[in-house]
Length: 486
Image (cartoon, rainbow, N blue to C red; front, side):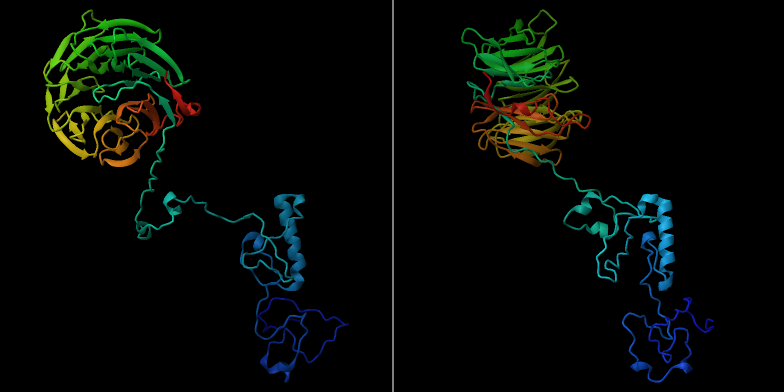
């Protein structure tokens, strides 16, 4: 019969008749202080038996609630069999009859059971709710963010793009002239590179690295400029005797020769069927290849050789630079410049229109100037100036990002990748031993090729790829190494 004053819900432990039970030993259910037997403190219980006193202390040694992730509740030793049976039935109902050999999981606090064996917790979360979260990129960095500690949301840290410091391909280009005022390299929309070497023009097919000689000039004439039409099928070739030849590159045939200049043609620029040519005779000729005449208009304004020529992306404005340190902007309806910029203090060969912002024009000056200047031709304003420390030979904008590349001559012969408008340097590339006079960009907008008086062409991977295209270039990894273009 249970003692009504007992707070324990455990049944009485049956007495083994073979055990040495002392009747003077206080029982578990006798919790009355008046029934304490003198000499109780001197009693030495068996180490294999649990000690019970008038104060209820729960014993959870036989509990096994870790399977459900529940807190432990007190149980007596004689209910362990029923608890194990219930657990076995529940496991069979949940996981099938083959789950009998599954080891019971243990709580994190009890990695070691009473017998001293280490039990490993199985990888399961039965009836346990767990929220799976994704860590932010900046939380993985080895430093803390004060804004996060203050509860202010911050944007993920933008990892700087890694630009290879070495060219992925080098071509030997014998007889590539070391002349600041010439433009001897251009890359077509059909992924074909045209290079003027002495009196010859060579075509390098980037898709298969095949080299083809397009033409040889006669009568001691030399190639002074090359320029592809937008479709990439026709190539204009400027010569030292003032003529412009038009070649069908796909068939290897010259379709037309156009005259009009008295001296060498150092700059060419296409606008659909309209071809502009700049010469050492200080003039610019506008040619329509559909017309029978050699040229349809003549632009005059420069006081020295025209060495830079570029049409805007919308074909509405033509920018020209000369050895007179002048930068002019023309339109289709006037033979006089509509804008004149005189801030440069050296020859202006490097000219580039931004493909991202209408009317944004960049120009670079020669050895005495060394500056890259930015202009807004829509508002006729000078935006900014950056002193590069070296002669600026060429400029080209990225098609896929608001970045641009400049190539330089005296005195460092470097290639610089800039981020606009902050004009922070992303990378500085070196390798040429002479002035980097020639520059062209691949049709996918990722690669550039540079040429120098050291008679080499170097290919660089500098710009990011378009988000909608594959990151791999059409050139492929098979083009690594150094070969000759002729």
